Length: 240
Image (cartoon, rainbow, N blue to C red):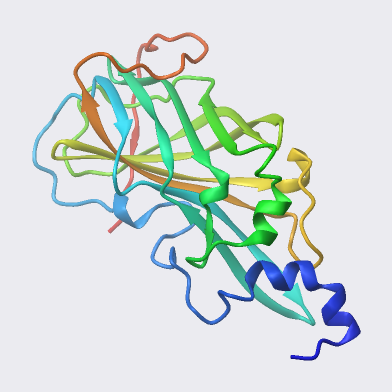
């Protein structure tokens, strides 16, 4: 295909999405702020969430942004299941949490993309990490199969730069699993990331987690003040 001068100039952006245009959004079923897997179900009973919960199969994380070329706006979504980490719940509050994602494993519309790995310099900075800085307030005995939400504050490290972030954390206890998700709105330039021409500097870091509880031997990275505050309460999220 012959490229015009303008198209060649936007080549970095075009390379970032060319394999995925028209193939659909693999996260299309997930609203930006509330992952679809966290939708409320019929409540069953109260149950404790205290303990250490580790990320397991079915968890994904990645980014969402947009490409604008010649007035046409195209969503760009990249994701990966190469996640590790854990959260610790003490007396009904998430007292500490840490997550880590392998950036080289991120797929743009389901395929590896050299443009993305170059943008994040995955060879030099292979992982992005999140560490919780303040406890997330929740109910000591949330209803089973009911989604809850609460604000969360932490530190996001990418490309050798760490910055504070605040976002809405959504979670639901479902059987033996704890499901959680969130969308962190970011400006990539704040992490010294230079997006290709046409790619917007703003976007979102999104995650949805499926976690299992460990009885012992697993620890999450310690947050500031690894204790549960008093009078903790999550606001119940109605997703009907």
